[in-house]
Image (cartoon, rainbow, N blue to C red):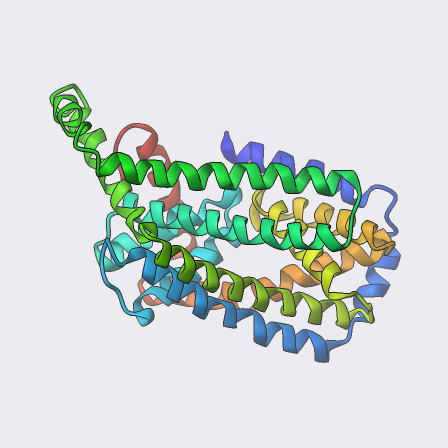
Length: 332
């Protein structure tokens, strides 16, 4: 059912993006793209995985200390899985793959991935806030910023409240009592594993370090995005590139089908509309951006799976099984 919902939403957004678009003109724009800038973007984008791996290692330290060389392949496989599976189910597979490779609790891994997403969201909200202060935009952009900010700050506050809950002496008798209830032991074990996964964000120092790494990650992706616009001979200012990065990235958080098809195209149409760039160029740029993001990550991720004797079909089956079993009270 979830897959059907994701694919249906992708179709809806794709129809909205393509409405009144000129398919022939989109093809012409794609043919005229400058490959020298694309090559730079293709070479730069994978560099963002280095600070991502460093950040994830720091978040995983309370769970298990791992080397970068152990984390990086899992990270790449997770992003590859996100590119081919609907509803960002690659996050589940990343946790599953880390558990299989390194013996890390899947629930703890998911907690660290949640923290990653919150940090990414807060970084993008900060970028958007700075842009809006100096370069006011349409009302819907302001609404997007307020909504995203409220969601991510609420989750961040929730994380710190859970951390306080973990250390509360008053809650231990309640937890002990709950363990005696049906399914109580299983639930409390998983909940405690989840709390362990949140320990990577226990101090101000942790927040500053992972925050700086998050800024570096999105700076790299922003420059890669800038190179892509240059491939279309577009002259887009840094603040507009930042706005494009925020809108496009937030679109990938909307439930959708594989590869963020539809939501990605519609986000480009909305963003380029703010810059008075026509829809045909926006759709062509969205297609090229997806190819840049997929062209190295996907083959490398698939190669890593094959190295571990896991087929793409096996990866999909593992995620489906994991998703179903977690809903039944098992799995991670």
